[in-house]
Length: 80
Image (cartoon, rainbow, N blue to C red; front, top):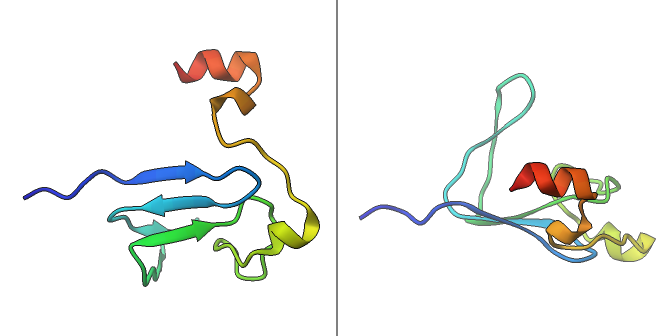
């Protein structure tokens, strides 16, 4: 039985939620231990535990859309 594909969902005004089996590595290729099947990755850049989210986005009022509509028209066209 094959596992479902990895899903990455950008939550409105919040983190990226990553669901499914995946491996995370740093820029040198060293594996970053992931202890859960669902992880929240920081989008605001202010988390104290980056690349993971610690909820700081709420305290600083981070705002971002969740869908492709948030992309500029040229970027949205390239994504299609």
